[in-house]
Length: 185
Image 1 (cartoon, rainbow, N blue to C red):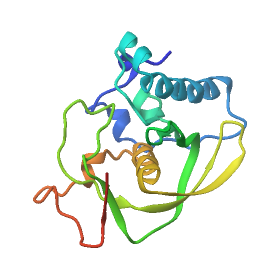
Image 2 (cartoon, one colour):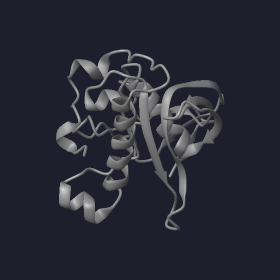
Image 3 (tube, one colour):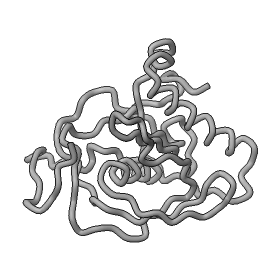
Image 4 (cartoon, one colour):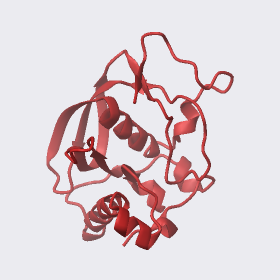
């Protein structure tokens, strides 16, 4: 079971490396890693389990965050109070094949399980993306995402390329955005 002790923190080399693409069929260890990352997200979003194991809530976890430099990330984006899941899958070798010109940022900013301190500022990303990825069984998917799920996937894909969320924040004006950009509440 992955816990916070398994998640490496900012400053570790693996977080700044370009992760390796995976080949299919995945090994049993690679498949298990994908399942374990998704289980962490499920557990972290369950208040009882999260409290028991001292887990910070997460909506995404990339393999480099558990010190494995492979292009794999699990994403679990909950919906509003009705508990409907907006997006849930483990992404293998994900690629953004198209995106909107319009930007979007989370009103409260972004956080990261690998970054312990709060870094204030808007992380402007694409509001809509078309994502191509493979699941753990090697099946290819192409999906269009917008708003929060699109932002979460872009955050996780950045991890696979050695980029952290605060790299996108404007140093001089951390809360600056273009007029046409959206704020996602």
